[in-house]
Length: 327
Ligand code: BMA
Image (cartoon, rainbow, N blue to C red; front, side, top):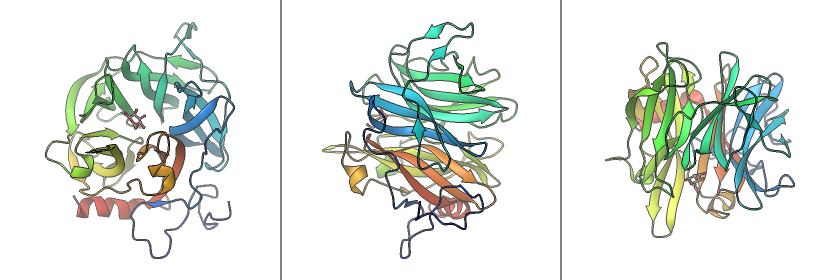
């Protein structure tokens, strides 16, 4: 990709410097969208997907909306995190004892490695939307685990490590439809099966207009010396429907139920054609972030208009300062 900055210290980290004259804290990749319409034979649209660095390259779990408009999850690989080789068949889940599991639908995946095992969370058909959770160690055998939440719930996002001996999951209790409300709840577990100690983490109540209808955790939170960096989506309502923007917050490292700062302005809102026009207009929905620790570079993957996969960049330290200064 000719537009990528060749000076990236991690040779294949997807990166472009902020364009001259741009003052945005989060700026878009000039070659967006990275995944266009009809990318594989069965799919009309691939968006709201999860990626992470793995070995010499990258892996991902993709939300693939079929031509019957039903979403399924597919596994994919990439050398550069820009050009993706997405499996043509969906992930086949199996039970702990190896029986195949059928999924009615599956969407909005997140992907994280915890202590050598890769966990996937997604919006699962319980039946009725709830959080699904599964794991793999080899990307060949995918084990479906217990659903951590009852219906209705969406946007399940695990922390990348235990904190104070417990796994942490963010989620957003919802309704069965397009949900005109929603706060982020933090839940605790010792074994990834039984979840409790539910805490209200972030609410829309009394907050900013761009996120006044509902909010939901986005990528796996990034651990920094200043706290957990949480990128999330916030939704406002208009006479023509919802608008999904991207926001940022900082959570206490040792007690992530404490919000240190939360930016009062969005970091990115739908503006360009691929964000404002598509299957669902005006949606920027982040589900994954890559972080290059030595350089502090962050690449955020977001679904655009429920149609495309797009990429935006930020510098970790600038982003943290921005969130603190604009809290
Ligand atoms: C939410 C989820 C997302 C979607 C968004 C906008 O409720 O279903 O998958 O991107 O709506 O349509």
